[in-house]
Amino acid sequence: MASMNKAILIGKVAKDLDIRQSQAGADYCRLSLATADKWNGEERTEYHAVLIFGKLAEVAIKYLAKDRQVCIEGRIQYRKWTDKAGVDRWITEIIASALTLLGGGTGKGGNGGQPKPSEPPVAFVNTGGELSRITLPLAGACLSPCGRPTSPPAP
Image (cartoon, rainbow, N blue to C red; front, side, top):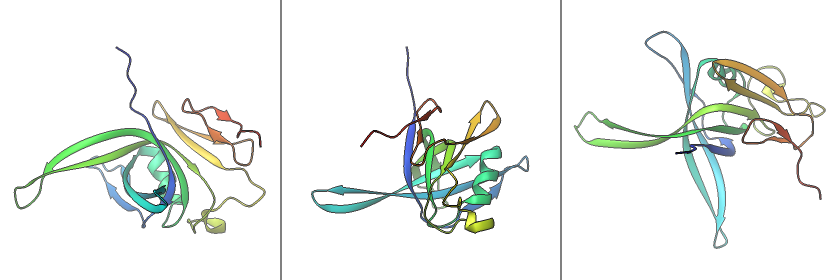
């Protein structure tokens, strides 16, 4: 049986990253990604919990901060835990496998973590434990769900 678990979200980082270390000592981070949608003429904001592990987490820690616009690709995970009061809780998370740095926000690093206006967006893709950096060839280009650069639609 064929199946797919894939989420692609474009939004802004809602607050600074929550950076943690695993028991093995590897960095990982959690972020809240805000996406906006209009429904019946009213704008609605949704907040998505995103977990980023490994080398992709290192990239996120270096370049992402509150208000930075980013495209996150990953899989959806549902998790249950019991809080301190003994109540069962559920959370829906996106486990990131790729991120593309887009415009907007302050970011971190040189130039506020932003690409210079003349620089195309940069995508980071986790491929089998290895992190690939892809410079997108066109302004406004994006990665297809298979991770290949695609051109935006013609005007």
